[in-house]
Every structure is written in structure tokens, then in C-alpha cells.
Image 1 (cartoon, rainbow, N blue to C red):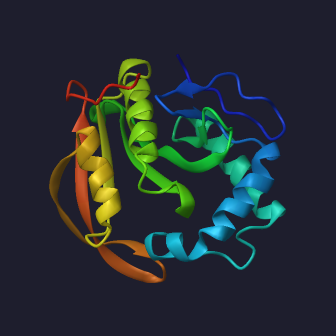
Image 2 (cartoon, rainbow, N blue to C red):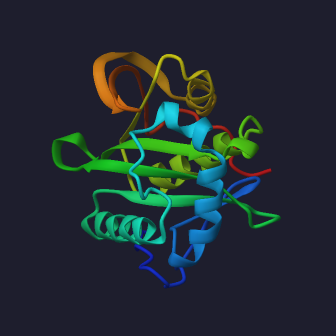
Length: 200
């Protein structure tokens, strides 16, 4: 199934179902939940992310994000999902496939994710990442998916190892996080590697 971008204000055409989570493309109506969750989690998230812009949580900034997500999906270079609790509908976080490469790379991509503070440590992101990986390998035909995290980010490392990623080394000064170029641990998973069960 080819992914279709959800344009601002347009209902997404599909969702991905995990054990406890539902993944779908973000839409304009998610702004209030997104801005509150990100705002409440700011101190929790900023050590692991690029420096936030002064208007990071504004409605205008959110609209710009939606346009970038839709453009990337149309170009086939990236796919963004928001992660919701299946029972309550609460926004939990987000995960994405970016830097999609074709050709000799045979459909490789980079995985990224974030989780709101109050939902962290409950296995929900592990469920979300497993669900996204299964879709990427089984339905989208990806061959390899990579991920990187700071050595100090034990929670992110746990997610990656739980879902079947293999550590491949360290990249020096790999990404500019919270204002500084920082070393990252590199991980990858390829089609055929075992994944945790995605259904209860």
C-alpha cells in the first residue's frame, strides 16, 4: 500500500494499528493536543532534539510542519505519523521514516521518534515502532531502516533493541542536538530480521 500524505484539514485515508496504539498522518485538527503535549514535555524532550525555534509551538509553526510532512510524503522521501492511544484517543508522540533512499540502497530510510513525558516508559513507543516497521517492511517494501541515538539516551536504546535493531557503531559529531554537534550510536534493522508481535 502506498502512503498518501494527509493534507492540512483532510481526514487521513488510513491508520496503522498496534497492540495499544494507532498511527496516522498528522492533520491540522491535531494542533491543540500536539502543542500541549510538546509544551508539557519540553524539558523532557529538548536534551534529545535539535534546538527548538522561538515559535516552536505556535499554530503557524505547526502548519509549516504539516506542509513539510505532506511534501515529503508526496516526494516519497519521508513519512510522518502521530501516535495515539487506541482506547482514549490521546496523542502520545510521533514517529517517522525520513531520508528515504531508493536505487542501489534498495529502499533504506532513517527512523525517528518522540514520546510525551507522561506516556514514556510504558512500552507504547516500542509498540508504535514495531507497528511502523512491520508496515515499512511488509507493505512498503523497505530493505533497511536505520536509527541513531545519543549514547546517554538509555530509553531510546531500549526501544531500538527491543524491536530488533542491531548496533553498528558510533558516528562522531553526527547530529546537532540541543545546540551542539554530538556523537551518536548507529543502529539498523533489515527485512527478514525478527520483529516483536504487533497484535495482542
